[in-house]
Image 1 (cartoon, rainbow, N blue to C red):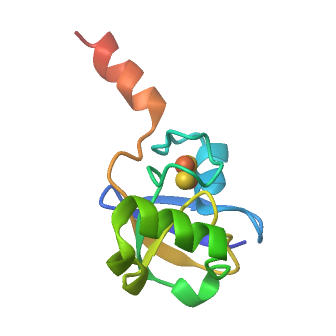
Image 2 (image 1 turned 45 degrees about the vertical axis):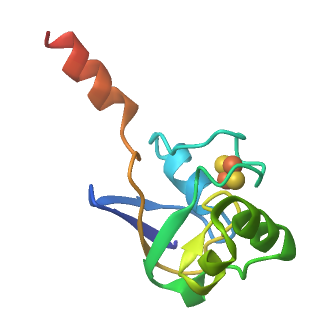
Image 3 (image 1 turned 180 degrees about the vertical axis):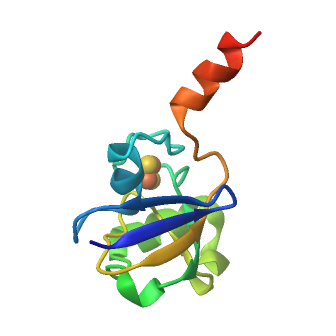
Length: 112
Ligand code: FES
């Protein structure tokens, strides 16, 4: 199964081929920042692809349009993908701040 390594927290998840990056993290129990709920409209889920871009489904016209509208056209020249749209076809390494295990927050607040 394709593996996703998420920096900077070094989270590693696996998911069946064709799963999106965001789904892979969510199914494994991790929170992934989103505003639109994975509908490809908000770009809150966008991540930097550090390696394995060739193992992701290509950007579609809708993803390119939303990224350019929300982040400026220059983003299209960068290895940035919407995690809710990019489907896994092999191992990738991405950088995304804010991805976290919701259980760790419960432990932190419970220790107060
Ligand atoms: S979650 Fe909104 S664009 Fe991906």
